[in-house]
Length: 287
Length: 323
Image (tube, rainbow over all chains, first blue to last red; front, top):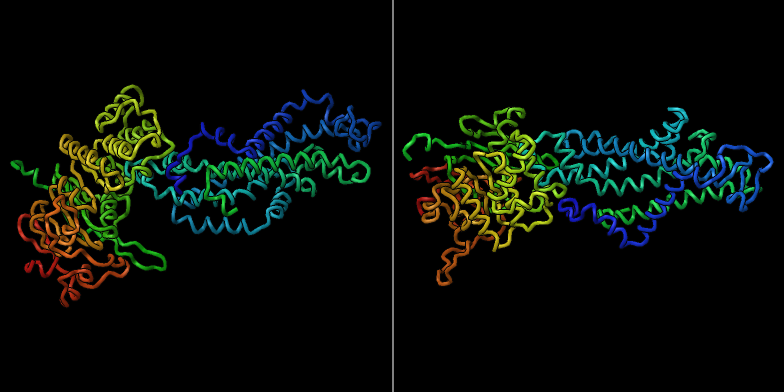
């Protein structure tokens, strides 16, 4: 609570503090590299991710095809790069969407006493479902598409954020600077944004990082199960899903997108752990 | 003293009561039937131990806590009867300075934004004049105008408290509740902030309700004093009179425990024993009787009526005549 009340840290120090934790810093560097690779895919790879070359089917890794080729002769390295675009974008979109819902619900539950019980019960009810099952149900109801995967996963992860936001809001609501604003007659929506939300950014950032990691993993899971993004669109999940059929002959089709997921998710977790430790020491114990 | 308007109080609190509903529906009697007046341009001290309801009383007057019942006639209007929307217009006339200088300033906002928020409430336009006004306010509370771009964590407790005072003054209020404004500060800084409040009160003609648990602070600053215990007023009256001739055993006990810079003075009273009882289940009759050295059986029977002793001195004790 002291961290929220006093906020002894400031944004400029964030990178410096990260630097003092080698694992978190390493995670951050890897994430940046992964994003850069995804963005620069056309520059890095000479191949078209969708170009078929049936003669080159299931080739093992070589200097020509660093990660080998898949069942349709497409370059796996190129596809991993392009898939990164989708997977990371989906993960990020889930964070944004979940944040919008979660912050709204959390602020309402935390700030307005009357809304606390109904909103909290709603949050509890949503959290009672296993993540992936709820996501499958939602995608099944909405129809399989990238947008619907984002909506479904956003709905799945929003309650976690809402809980964190609610808990912090309950504390901040009682702080004298909020009372001071009320004494000045500052309208409630402005109090919520300027005084409550602004002091929530640290726990929110920590949660967002973990949700980012989980969303990438969940998207891959959904795609693997065939209820997610269409197999025509390369994502790490769809690549694994397709590669599974060739596990005996060409395991590299699965290895490399799988490795990309592991590296990305692990790095995000490392960054999240680091952020949590110095932004929000309270949470460090109970995760 | 010549104009009759000087004698009409700026604020008359009548029968202020605040009950909180705790877990399991228990009723917490935080403030019970509190009445007092504050004349224009004067400072009234509201004193009591922690748990006496003094802070809740102060916040209720500003409707930061909604009072359960009672009236607060401020400049002719009962502000407790105002609808929440109407209250917004009155808010800038009543301000508050908080106890904790650390949590009373939003750590994410620069000083100019903190004071600027108050100027917004006043409808102050943006631009150069606004910056001037912020500089003016910082100077008024004894800070450098260059500080406006800094964040709260760059300041000491005393400086933060000055910023809090500047924020309260930015809306040019008539009335300020100072809620233990120095009790969280180092002793060396307390006097500075007290002097500042005293000067501002004089120079700006402010009316102030000064909440404190320390009677010596109140004696220095206040024209009148209200002594609270477990949500009720025990004694109130002009400071000089109350200090020279306390008529309530609780006031006597408080005065006896207050440190006096005179090692030769003998302590005449035994300090109070035990803790303040729970406001969930306050004692019957006089709420102070459980710790009162003078309590008799009759004290448990009736709530002692507030008696007027003359000269605006009031006391709620059935045995005050024997003191």
